[in-house]
Length: 364
Image (cartoon, rainbow, N blue to C red; front, side):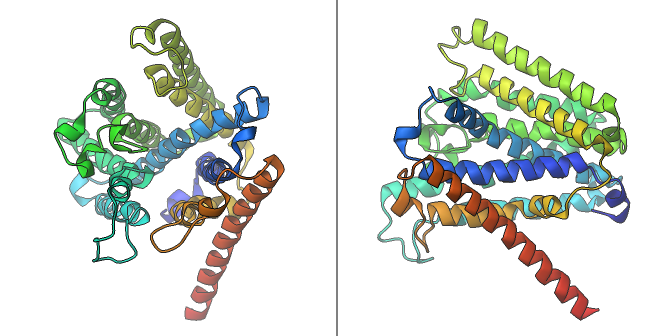
């Protein structure tokens, strides 16, 4: 951030980023290690964890879109001269590269003779890094359209969000493998094995852009109770809309539950994300500062993601814990491992920050 933006640092966004990272790390760890015997929806604790696990991606994606757009619009320059355009494209390339690198099918960069069809399918599957990469690219493209057509960001980003949400069902019913190779088809639906196809997941990134643009255009609005109240109102409206669609609309879509990725789920989760933003922004109203560690965790989201994923799931160059402990631990051991993973990731960012600070001291 620039010096001026640091003075008005949006504390609740730092807290949301930290929450998203903590949710991500513990969610992946528990999902890998907890034995199936303890995965019962009759357990209130597991049901709560399962619900929050489902909220991790929307929180993570929405926050990513908010932060990128906030920084993009904070630079009050035309699109062609805005340095955030170039930075965003670089970020797109980096995330895309790392997303595929994490799923690379062979330890050798040039020998693919032993790669199985299942390994190729895993490599082509779209995961969260590729999704965020394209989410950023869409935000840049929509910002360009908004400037050219002289249309408000809120309208363009809201329409973009609705398009990705609305097209999810019809797109998911199409066999895209009949039109495109796996490397492309995975971006359109989950039928080829993708965890995060663009439809509907990119909608959460673009929805975050609405909030990011608003915060950039109203620099001190986050310090008012009114802001938190309006977030709560919009969040409640989306939650109620999702609930109503679940009752009235899902039978029309031949869906019987809110928990599969149905139209009601998509809207419901967006509402919960807004409610969480409302709660945390209200808590942060009186705070002038927060512990530095929360800011460091938010700044190192990508590093934390890559490191903990390779530890848990492995890569072409290392085995993961899943290969030896897959769904084999009891509740307490799983909780202990999740806390240990969180501690390790926190320690990592502290040491990296300390190393960078010492190097700057030496240089000066």
